[in-house]
Image 1 (cartoon, rainbow, N blue to C red):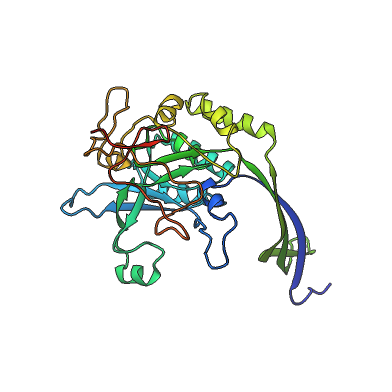
Image 2: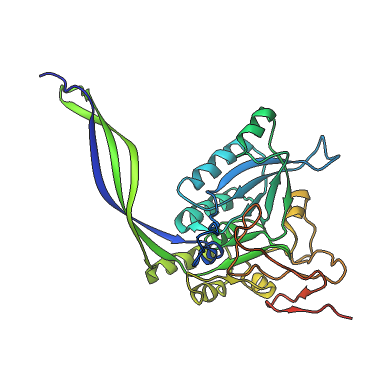
Length: 342
């Protein structure tokens, strides 16, 4: 029997259902955009080992793991790869993310807890350039990534809260924000195209190796996540030692919106164990015995207000909007901005 010649191209229509907790800040920013205003879309999550670029820190510059962007399929694999590269070093994770796939985030949180890793909410500003800047990175060669941590206006929203919950210690300073809301079920119809290569099996039969070469989303719809989904989230939070008060906050907030946790909610839910900027997590945090100590107050600025729900910013200038803060105002943690005391 002759071997079939050539290749076969096979197309299949599949339905993919994902439970997602999309980023509320990004979702709100994309609401009714004008034709001239680009919609802010958070890039996929990337995970890197970073060495501090602070002047004078060598030869003992601190290192950390930077995780920034949307949680998607493959994010867990990136964490596993980076953790395998750290060896016996227990580096903290600094995260800045608007959320994404819930199950992926749950798996990352469990992985971090199993390794005894601390998590802080903070962006990483790379220097002299971000890893994605190909031309710049080519000049840098194989040098380690350098950067500085920056907790200011950093966010851990939506499913990112599951990753934060996985930290053994969880650092959320005054300039950083944690947000929660309900999830959504996203159902996609996808047309997949495969290349089928024939080969002869040991029994003499002809079989085919299948390789996906193209994928196109035909349609997509979003529906409310089933109630049993939240039983899984509740169980996870209990497993991680997070207080029961977090679930009512999550369930009371529609998927298209977001609830930014106040200082008291951060503390009562135990989603944060240290009210200390994540920069201190890298340098070696010092806090009160109960782990709850605010950074030293500078002037009259105590806290900054949370980002508006109609605006978003991820690792750079916001697209189509901006966050404005009055330098002399203070924030009491309840969402209300007040004038500084006289």
